[in-house]
Image (cartoon, rainbow, N blue to C red; front, side, top):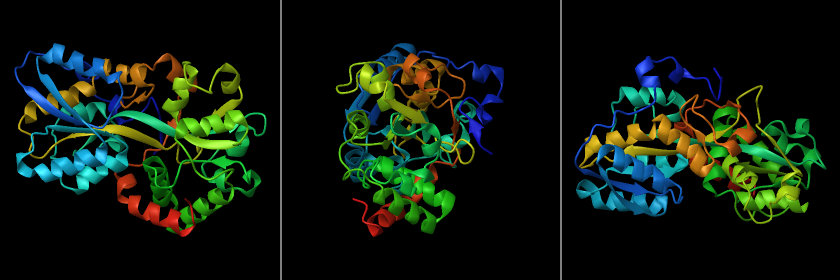
Length: 345
């Protein structure tokens, strides 16, 4: 069953849990956080946890794959308590390396919807970004690009812009297509989208939006928080005039729902400060932290019903795909293989 952003299993929980605050009784100690989130706005997230709990956060930051390899190499002697990263595909890689331990937490179960956490509680999603369709309103209308499948329609020949197929966000979207439609249909979709390309894949999500603004692209796929940043001003090449040209669609609202991805975290198997690590995960699911994910980095909260920041609210609410994100990792290798088979660069 598909749900709107505000609805989900987490709503029907006891009142004391949905109140949203983790009881911040003072506790001595520390946690060692390995993080691949590189947002300056997260500083407030960490400092408030320290102030509320008395638990010090020691941070090591780096590329997700580098951190995963570091924890793997450190083995049972790893000081890592928590691994925090972006994209379900990356957290799945850590899971496949056996880096996480299950976390039993009624609070996390009540707060985080089932499709945004591992079936065996090895990791939990704490913020969301939808990967949606943006289009040139002077060339297309909403109905022409209402689904991901429409990106392969021949009517869009010479219009579609994306990142490279090896990008983790592109792999996750393809992995979802495989799960929903099977490999053959997913491959045909990738081939159609590639045939409709306006240019060779280049740049990041913001570059795809700039491509629409410049007229080079008629339609593009990008994560919501990149456009929400532009709505807040300060993104080069995406001023008021350019933004006015760009429309957006939350795809597949009458079928699977819009594809979502997460920033997520899990407790490392060898965590020397396990209880403090769980306290940190529970804090990330509190209303306070969830609101800051939205306000600080223009992401959608993972917890249903939490207030959205002004720019995220401008994008609106949507029906999301409730496919468990574990599938995005599981299908990742096949996704790359199918892209490669159709020559998608």
